[in-house]
Image (cartoon, rainbow, N blue to C red; front, top):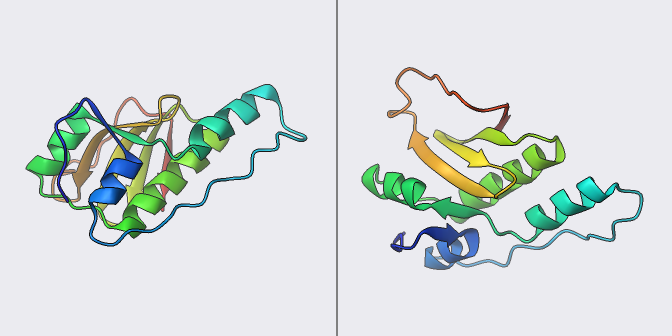
Amino acid sequence: MRIQDSEFLTALQLQESATSRRTVSRQNLTGEGFSFQEVLQKKVLADDNLRFSKHASARLRQRGIDLTDGQLERLMDGTRKAGQKGIKDSLVIVDELAFIVNIPNSTVVTAMDSKDAVENIFTNIDGAVIM
């Protein structure tokens, strides 16, 4: 996977750079029976607009982390679930990979694998999702 040098990479850009491509289905957002806050959160997360900050992109490159389509899909699913629970800054664990995701901005702020999480201490999060 080749990470481009832009400020943010969308999940779609990362997915397109993978060797196998698949279409990610979008959620139905009718809004019936939901509060404005819930509809807003679902709309933001349903757009599959998960981005990777410049820092997270650099960490993926430095650490030689290549996300498969399945891992990327589970990361997006974990981000959606965190948003549905009202989490703002979440640790999302996918296989042996850990991601800190700012949920309101749908942005992965850093990424590491089990080798880099030596102390297994994560700060400044208010929830965790294990996929």
